[in-house]
Image (cartoon, rainbow, N blue to C red; front, side, top):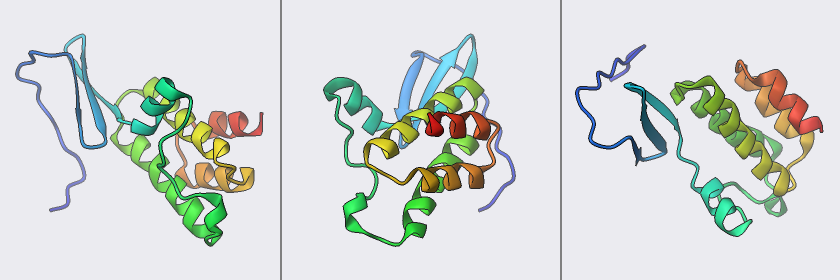
Length: 129
């Protein structure tokens, strides 16, 4: 089934926070917010090492695999997220992980630009710093 939009009505809540698949679901001021459930970022916050989440550069796969993987992750954040600030931060965590893996800066920028997010310019500036 394919639909252009989906409306979710929050009837009640006994918790303000939960996760489901790759989403973190938060109820804040009676509104439902959805953001990326980045387990790799959570691992980094505990151990200062990212969980294996993306292909390693040493695998020497074709460039399009790396760019396509990054693009699909950013697109997912942009499409599923409901809070602009959270989407920006979630994207930054992904970018931090790609940089730590040694991904080519040009590949990261190409993936960001393909995404055409409201945060594209800021993400590109962060990669260049």
